Length: 149
Image 1 (tube, rainbow, N blue to C red):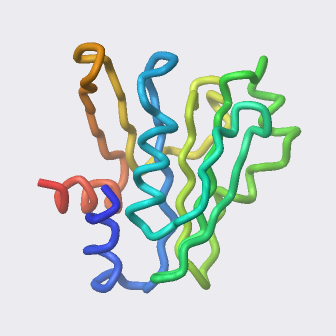
Image 2: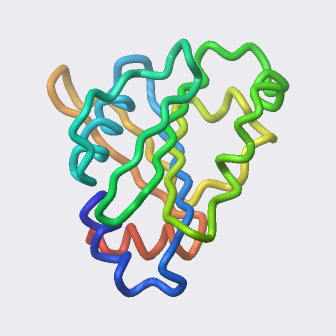
């Protein structure tokens, strides 16, 4: 996915994008591990913490400049909690730079989140392998999935 983003970026007009990715799967299926791998591939060299208790951890990579916001909504009790946390502004994007919002457990804020560009379902194939089902719900999502093929 990261290489698809990096391949798309130079040809995109405008030169910025805001990408939203839903990460779905059982506990321990690999949602945070996927996020760590994506961030590493995009150039982040620091630690990537699970946002289970903070709800959101933000990162920035610099070539190209991308703001990445990683959400974990597992501990939320209602969609209203999401609205009260004030994270909606992260989903508006910024016309001056690229940004990505990755959301684990998006169903916890059902009805309050925008439509995701890409939805990734991660399931256990066995103890050591995972199966990924990627679905696009926007033109950007379709471009990214096509670039992966």
